[in-house]
Length: 440
Image (cartoon, rainbow, N blue to C red; front, side, top):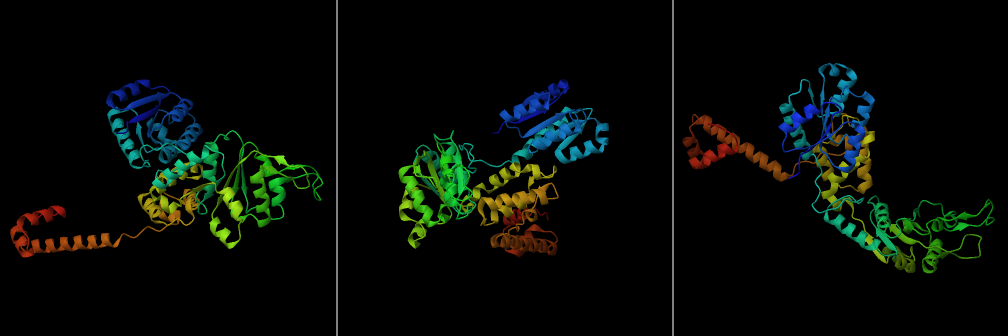
């Protein structure tokens, strides 16, 4: 059972807090006097429910609004003087940020009931996490993500090259970042290079650097991206897009751990760990002659596969809630989360764009939503139709209910005669009446 914990911000009225404790003996109540103390507490502990005791109207409006916007995921209940709510600014703040409010004089029993209801509602909307899973930048608790995190932990311990495969938008760069953070090179730089985004005529000088005078316009020496990753990790994203002539130079670097700048004659030793990623199957690219076979085997010493979002349907709600909070600065203050219809639409969508598509749709909804909850239209998704089995069950129940009602009306509400006409026992008839919530 999750303990019921309350963060109470009360600058002055500690007597009311003591009375509240008496009415809420099974709650863990932490009292702070200021927003700075509250922020410090929230960095250390998680709370589902918070209480603002005479903060509304007792602190500057902008200060209160800034704090509530920062912690809008918490269900806040406010206590204020009646005349305070006569001011439009405070009234709007209560409507936008609080899930409920009370006015003075305070009835602590009613307030305890309100806080209990708010806690229960917060639990209903809380993302479910699988027991025993540790927090990670790789969000998700489905079997596919557990396997990925296990792979990341293992490959991070060694220095061999890693090849990450996954569909576009599935989180390959995030996986590379996780490997780097857990490796012995975590204090060194992580240098990402998108091999498909650099112009072909510049990619050699960008990767390997150049000496002054190597070409027209080379007025000074330039350190290449590979050399700038010295002591850390080099992440080669979309390695399959690397031109064939550059593939030979990269292979030489992987073999010798040295580079030669453009226009130079001496080799420079570079100590980096190489992680590469591709959304195309490099084995098929090798078979077509588009990718060097020897380079492929140099890069894929430790292969890691990132699952698509279609393989992670159990994580959809958790991911959507995470991106909702991550980009909450873009949302209206009255927007609280996703409606049940929106979550059903998210679960039914195929997500061809993977996590990147989910992020884009959530960010769009944060801006476009007008109400308190994000709806399917805000995500530009379609509400799934009920399965045919559910439709047939509804039709069957409706027909059964109509037949029972017609038979009862025909027999003058006589249950025994109605049961006989329907060809069922009297006991079965009473069971059917209870099933449909009917009375003779």
